[in-house]
Image 1 (cartoon, helix red, strand yellow):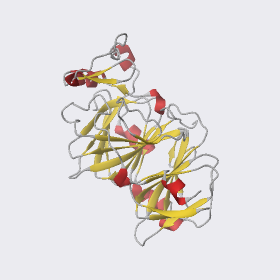
Image 2 (cartoon, one colour):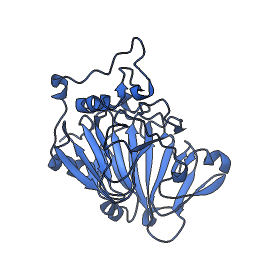
Image 3 (cartoon, one colour):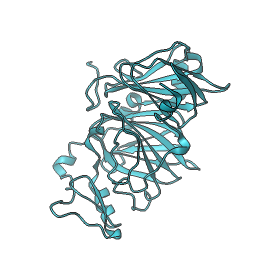
Image 4 (cartoon, helix red, strand yellow):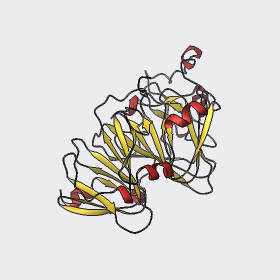
Length: 323
């Protein structure tokens, strides 16, 4: 593969194209300054103008959310995995029907494999614009977003209506539900009762991994962060490893499925049979299946990257090993 061909599979942080009307809460005060990015795959955006950087199926989606301080993403749920790692800033994640069942604060490099089937939201509690990177299970990312009823009701007061077809319509811009398309129905009380309300003591130990703990575990070889035998044990249809300076290898390797490299600290030189390039934090690189490649730190200093590859497991509810 030539360098220009590979460059077409790299999304540079500075070239990310945001969508500011991706979801139903885009006009709701407190959530109206967030930016959403669909990097690999179709994502779960409800807006027709969401830009997709790389449409090649990987078995999972890669996205990102950027928000200024005090901006939040409203309570929602997914049918497949939603994994976040913090690229920059300080973030509070919260969950439950009203967002008060539990919460956790994450900082740069920390990763959160949010349990499927719970309402979750997040907010930037730092002092500057922050970015979190997301991995969503499945090529169709679970078929979309399930919103807490109050989010849909609040949005209607600010001009956005979500159709049962999963598309957004901005009544303040003269848009209306098309003929034959009903509004997205609100979840009933019976349906809401099926969404768990786990406490932080149940969620944090099993679903959160701290960056510096992972760095320690990756001293001699990359640490499997998410996987059947990972630090966070799950089979969401993909595996996530953390590679550090001390665990990086010059050995050229390949996978039978496309894989993704996502630096979180430092600059990384990626070489392959045909060329090389350097990745920086916030860049996302899709490596074709079967292509032998290696990644090593390109400069001195702290260096770490997350590596993601599909496993062939079906994307679905959070998996737990038998007791």
